[in-house]
Length: 385
Image (cartoon, rainbow, N blue to C red; front, side, top):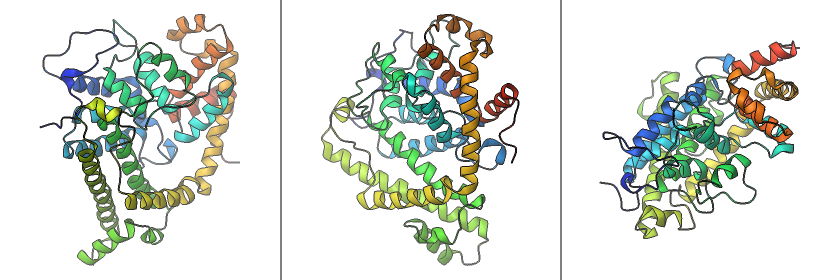
């Protein structure tokens, strides 16, 4: 039985374009299915998480990451009696707007777009699901319900200050109440993202040789889990030891989030999903002690993995690729796909042209971006030297 403050599919604010709802799926199930079937979701298969796609098939991609986030989010949402389908929809969609090459690509594209309003992957996700996906006969985008769109836009908290242009443009016609917190379901999706990447980046970092397994024994939570495994299974092989320890790290984080959030929800006195939005503070949270531990783990990953010399070398190369690709398209929009001709004809200002180019580049996979750069520039940035 869902909690009184869970989002109710029978009480949603509807879709921008009215549709007859399914007789066998809730609106949130339908949203989740549309997200899974959209082109941007499939392209996540070849978008990097940390490593550039060609470096190995073992490492996480944006697609496998999104699936892991959704799995964690479903577990937490179920334990808290929230709406599992809405939670899963937001979790699956949360990275649709990522550029090729992860945050490296986003940083590069944001810098290139600085004269034209900048670039933000969360806002781009909303742009994808409301405009750029063009498969349906009656509307652009996926025509998701308000609650799903709100979760995508605000899962990291209220949007304050300067609002990214992609988000501001849509919000002008369909008010997502950007000043409030999102639903509890969207908040679960946001912190499930933290749980997933902290765990799988430890695993991938060790596998890639960027992290010393003995060094991570000094990390909070992680070291305790390794010691538990060593005590329970003294003769276990190294690979099973690592997997068993890191799955326990997963369990500690998930358990702490559930326990703390359950206490927060009980103390909030919320009688509806809207009460959660208007509470003025998040209700889904880790305990203070675990949050401090997570900050230590993130700092360790940032220093030893995300800023490792080999990773930084690749970051520099792909940044050059995007920095050179962007002006090539800006100078000749005819290089964009022919099906974009309608938008090209309307792009008369430099800002309109830049946003069109940014949409195209942001949608590329790692390998396609490198292929396009090599073809149009005449050189391959990934070749050493």
